[in-house]
Image (cartoon, rainbow, N blue to C red; front, side, top):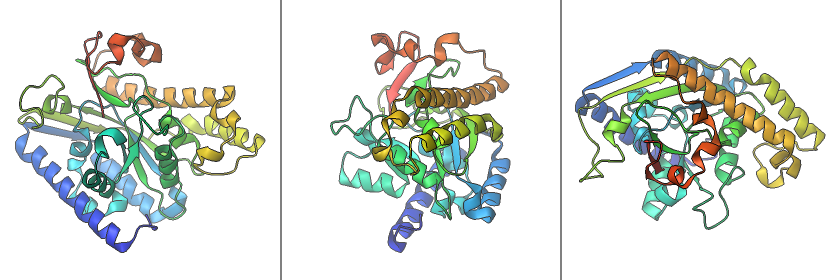
Length: 321
């Protein structure tokens, strides 16, 4: 971002390039097979956006979440030239109680363009939930007037390792990234496979070492057509106007009607549902069986056997990240 000092930008560039290169080597040398689909189209889109500047809007990539190593490993597929420029690398959201537990860890993840995200059930500061600083910052990044950024999110909110890659319900945070920026961001669905075999939650000793000689697949879908969200964004803009709210990514000053009002809630639910359906379509194209009808419902995950970490009563393995 333009507000970062030259020193910070330089150190961040080195951090991103180093981590990215290590991930690239690990994927290319230590794994049996790495199947990447749609990367050329994605890179072309990102290069075209740079020529358009602020008028292009930001980019939101959205994927399933199947291991604690998904990010950064999945970005080892990017060309080295991209790793050298922070503005060409994603911003991600990382759990505050895992990634930001000490000054060295906080510095490392901050230099790696990870935004500290608070989980409501683990936050001791009351910063968790839909209206937390991490989501405000994400909206700001996507709304930059000169260089709108790329933000990647895992809307499931935790690792979900299901035998057939069935996904959890999606949390509503992703809806803020689509509804609130003044220029509609480009939303790109992704689907990843195999990283759960590199770091499965049932792994034994040594748990901290990623497994080798596995097969992974990373698929970039086509950008979601803008019209999929246009009616929802118009309704959100009208709602903001009717409530005298003209700020961007400022949940502290957001009127209650835009936070918890019936129409605001409806718009977030519907936006999130449409995003999830696009990833379900991508999963379907990869010949995975149809999901259970209840997989997308939050009610499915409210029982004690579904909220815990480890193996759930559904048979999937889960982990907060």
